[in-house]
Length: 165
Image: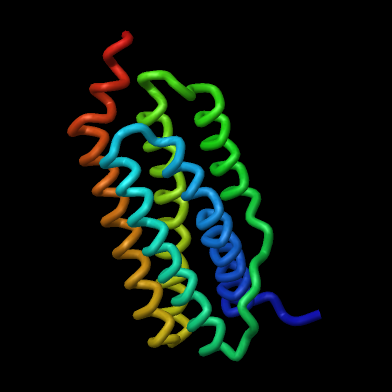
């Protein structure tokens, strides 16, 4: 059995986030379809392209490490996506649907920000300069997406959900 060290933990976490990004790519088109506000649909569509780029960056890191890109089941992202699907079902047609979708998307973003931040720190400690740059690019994208979603929520989505209260 191989020694469990920071490098093996880094690779396991890389596999975890690779799996998560692939699952997110499958979930986003459903969220685009379910969203009612044009700005929210647009934000989700934009994130599809960003997520594709993030998958490519992860594949570059696997290549740098001489590893085949592969995912490792991530129960956390599975649960977050499942919650988003429940919101789509439970709030379909309601004024609160978009607020729920936005909250589900931010749960995904916060998970990703946590993972990419950790991976970037570990890559730094492990001396993986190319990986640090790739992870930082994704971390910056995820943070900007989270900020954009917050602005969208504050500008109109949450107020619309309040209409029926």
